[in-house]
Length: 370
Image: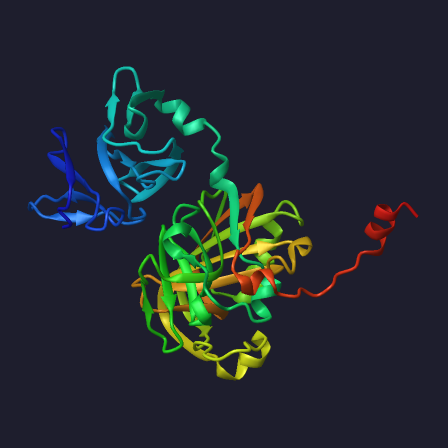
């Protein structure tokens, strides 16, 4: 168990101890629960964080504070963790929330905002029902048209992406494989097939992420192939011009993925000229998660229209850009995103890149008044 700057809370009703930690690198902390034999187990399905407070809401629910933005990035996190189902829900707060206190009689949460030397007091019900727009917004770094035409050089450290979302996908610096983001952690699947967690200073050239919070759920118990599942999901999407984040978890009889080797010399070719170099991987009888998005037609070029998914196995050893699969016992979670925030790279390669001209005759006539 990571014991670097831990906080503990004992529940006399269950005779259990909940422990949270900051992590050795102040942001890679975890949450643990004591077992009947005195050991501690790390709780799954919660992103690593700068955990600084833990409270029991009841005998099966924890409330956990997460600085996340130390020293400051504009917001913090509060997690509610369901011990029975081993699932966490994220609520965004103001930045710098440290140790917390929950008053079980008044149902109020006391949250010290250390960076502003004050205590925020809120109702548990308000925390759970208040709208947090960051949950259902897409953050995008880079432009797809530029990327596929040779803008492979990484310009944004992935550590900064972790303040923008906890679920997503992208490309590594110099197209060295594929990037996949799940539960706040970023994984790189290399052309060798190896999947690792790169350091926070590792850079990306393009990445899409959101704080994932599903609003639509359904299960598929039978065996199903890729095209059939996309058709089934399409029936659930309420708006054809909507933006959706989609998480698919379960067992897979077959998964095919790919990853590119690094590009080494300039001028960088368009991505279609690299297809002969990509490596393919086939996995059988595996468990894991498909992480991806559905993008509408009007975003094509800025992003990539249609379905775009990466795969990450349960043991985090298998991954890559998804090409095909056969799954069964799948849980599908869908989040309709309400907006998109785009950051464009400031480096010379991007700023001097010549994008293809896209004329819209109607818009041109409107601007010219004729």
